Amino acid sequence: QSNMRGVGSPADVPPRPLLASRIWNYKMDGTWQNPAEESIHDPTDRVYSVFDSTESYIGPGLFFADHFVRYNPGFEIGLIPCAKGGVDIDAYARPVGGTDTATLYGASRARWEAAAASGTIEGLFFYQGESDATAVKTPLWAGKFAQLVADVRSDTGKPNLPVVYVQIGPCTAAYLDTHPDWPTLQTNQSRISIPRCMMVPNLDAVLTPEPNEVHINTASQKIVGERAADLMRVLGACF
Image 1 (cartoon, helix red, strand yellow):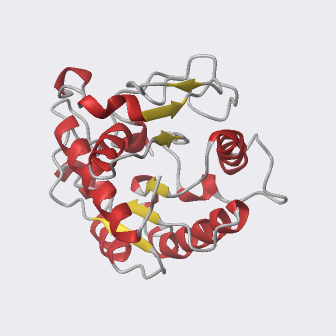
Image 2 (cartoon, rainbow, N blue to C red):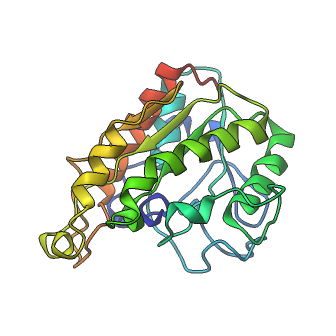
Image 3 (cartoon, rainbow, N blue to C red):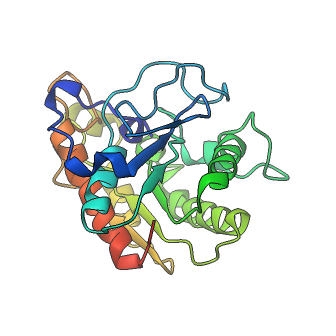
């Protein structure tokens, strides 16, 4: 989820397209920003304390939106960022009742329901898994992800909600030495079969130039976002 929040450098962001006015961001303070600007996960005045309080940088979300609107004339898109860095997939498990905003799922649900007053929920874009690359957690990730998809579809009232998720990317050799299950999780993610759900391949991503073990750079974030937008179009998402 730190890759979804973004660790890419702002200095490497290309110029925004002319269609930027068609992209909105539902900020962490519960207000809409138009046109959307980085960082879309800006924690300033965040409503729900469960989300990160530290600054984020460049993730794939805005690249996703830029690419999507380019090929969908006449439509506007609203992003509802809900990522938190450094968490495993259990952190997104649906709590009893589904509405406890002290949990990531409950706070995310509160955000999408509030944002839906201005439109409709048309898709889920998910990028997580690095924290689950262990011998104990790796075999369980696919099943927990499938449950998350089912829960989101149920709570949005959209059983066919398009879902796009990102395969975890590369890691350094030193990190792989201590996380030997990393390639297994990558493979497991590629074998998931859920209706109206597609994976963004990410094995060719490039890590940030800093001594960073798992975070991909801005250019790779752009590729991930654009691939995700293409898959959403294949799934028939119409924002």
